[in-house]
Length: 467
Image (cartoon, rainbow, N blue to C red; front, top):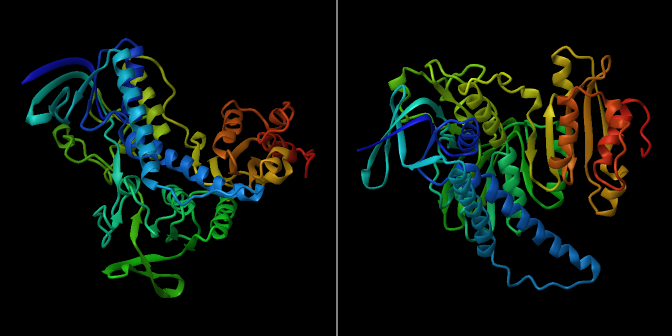
């Protein structure tokens, strides 16, 4: 059995773990990172990156068909989804190798295998051919991520009943797909599959698709999906399914107990994720998880000294960018610096990469009122921006939630082309404690989509021009 001594050992090399490792190396710590699969974790390998590659290819395919409006006839009969799949894997592999390069550049030792914490400061790693390595560490960060959540009666077999991982690994398109769960992942897959010609049905238990987003933003996307003949069933749950000669027969129960059956070739279940906190040795530390999550303090320290936890294993939003920031905070605390405690939940951006895109941060008007603010909102339509009209992307809006007394920005909810990029101007204004008039008075290049942000801020002052 080989032994390694290090200042910091990190369990998991996803966007939380590998970012923490690099930041720790920058601060002069000797770092060892332990990963049982590929560097980059779920995000780079079977999540954010390959799904965005598929979305890019889907949009190219959609736009190719739109070229007929210019009198161009395109023969799409040779379309091969297998090539789309390969492009998504190429993007994932390239970035995973990039993380490997960063590990070498920052002199971070990578140990491949499954790590189990035996006691504070000691991790046993089981690698290929059952080879054991003991890692003695002054500090430990748990960053083991999460996995897709299954629901009773719909266990994943990755052939007919798919998780998000199984959907990303499809090399052939199903003709008919039912998606259980219309959150960000469900809506993104609906966008991808329908773009390539799959008949898609979205099923959501709550009363709107994208239940965590602003209702008006949800309505814009729902209207676009319906134009694309994506069937949407809200306030509906799946009771079960049977395999028949025609495919999967899925029984649904809608509002007021109304039942109906849908037939599909495959079923995609995307109803959340589960933290990977089992079998990593928490019991050896005396740490009890809460609903699978590890309790942590302001700097992501656990109840055990020198043991930290970040990312999907703690009860903060399960987002890659959140995990990365938590990793930086934890490492700076370990290194004796004074980082800001935790992350303000009202400054966490949310992004949904459909077409149109949805992006948001902070409070909706209703939630702001419940918190005691004298809240109001403005909503500037994309069609008021020349760039949006010129690029045939006029569907959308920029909604700003603010306090009527102080004019403090409380939240933003953007629906439309490049919404996930445009959002950050408002987020920067909020985090810098700027007022709407500060953004409204700044000259924006014309024509740009970001003019929608300027106009929405001018609306607060009653000075919008293009509406």
